[in-house]
Image 1 (cartoon, rainbow over the protein chains, first blue to last red):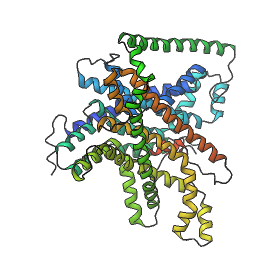
Image 2: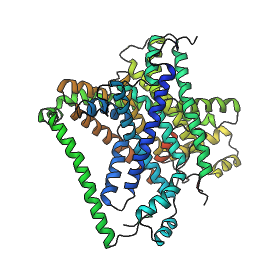
Image 3: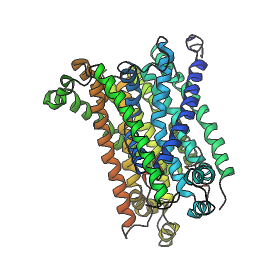
Image 4: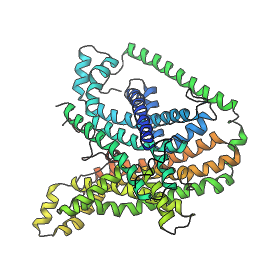
Length: 225
Length: 301
């Protein structure tokens, strides 16, 4: 009944899901860094940076991820020559471009989550920090962001789960991850329903623990006020 | 301007801000200059590539039909998903375990599966088990995928909307002797729908964006797909991407602005119960988080 799984060895079922996990991890780390920078810009005292952060978030959030991912391949790679250090290895190039696209898109949502976290920090905290003579960078990195991060673990978990599901869009530029393998399998094999169930189960396995663990963590680490 | 993080700037802070601004603008200009140079080198700035967008032909042949298909799929999905979501959401709050548990399972499972998988599956299912013509199949598959996903998200919106109503509404309805179904249909649901309206409008943005998946993976002739045909004809890859992105941004920006206008209006109005579900609540719901949505800073009560 499940022998269709062993017929595919490039990639195997587990191999394809491993690529999905890798896409999620690399894009997750990248968008956390870029999203934090964007959030810092959006709350910074420099009006131009605030303006840039706002514009970035509003523009990127309203473009479909599919358009962004397809653009990294047809636009960035083919026209601008951005090959992410993998000019000859087409597979690696696709993977890295997909990560780039996912970071650009997900960072906008990370930024919004963090900004809402910054808003939960009471004004008194920052006032007290300024009163003992800390400057903007110190207030942000020592007082506000640590509390904001603990408040937004829940929302960030949601962003991470959405990212896990969004990695399937990388199939649009031929990255050999779960969605692409499912498309291939489902077209060649007779057991449409079974294959669909196997891949659906795979994603439930990936997203369920993330939600449970980070949900538990967010309650555990919440700042008691 | 003051905020949580900094005071009104003094002379030193003002000077520092100017320096930061200059450095930031310089970095931004450097990036833009690189983009401009590369585009110029590759001949993407030539007027011939942009000219089609000033003439009717590119719009009537490619972009408008593509936009039409995008809107058609989005509208169909919304119209079908909304009642389905309402039924699922209400079923999930049922007093009967045998109704509540299956409805909950359906909602949680379809929220956890990527929309693309649902679309691919629906496409193959229609090809094998039904006699939908291959011409109509992409639209059917896209709508099916979007309906399955968004109905379960909307089910959570409906549930959150009903739960956000003050308890007194149910209690008063019971006090005047309404049955459970009467309480739901004439007291709770109408108020919940009002509270949900902004969330529903912003869910439309998610649907509009997801139609693009059908264009790349199933050959559905929506906006991103017609961009490909257009670029094949005029060889204007970058201009066509820019124009299509701008159309999506404008369209979704209108929807987002409408949702927040609606939210502000509903919050102001005196007749409502004061329960409003905003756009941010939907962002939480879209993540398929298990065990109910988290609010930003929800732990810090």
